[in-house]
Image (cartoon, rainbow, N blue to C red; front, top):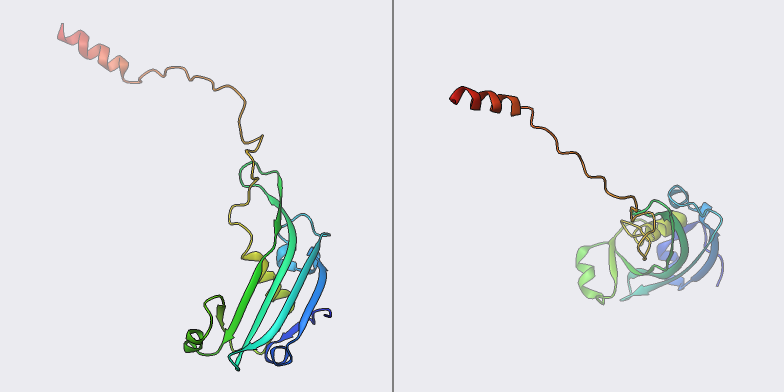
Length: 169
């Protein structure tokens, strides 16, 4: 295993059956770096390339990353350990998907080369929960201040009601 190149050369890597592994920092991923507070933490990625059915380039891999996000319930920091795994088949025609094992996620793609960082970023972003929050009940979420009863508001038309009743007498 060796470090992952900056650009993935899909068909070339798949034909050679290459396997890569590398440790990054969160700050190496600009789009992730924008939304997390733990920019110095490590990100481990491993990728395996191969050809399926004699013609379809595939990538199988995994990423290990801890992300520190704002809890959407209490707005304090919540740390999530993410371990997205993927098994992707890059097809040129949709009918190629029928030939594949259902365990593959198919991607309609004609690009031979693409950015490793962008590819890994996409895999991490789709694994982040839409509403990140603590697994326990957040302390600040439970408002401990007593509920103050509102004074009974007076009806602004009460005077008219009184006038109406006084004219009937």
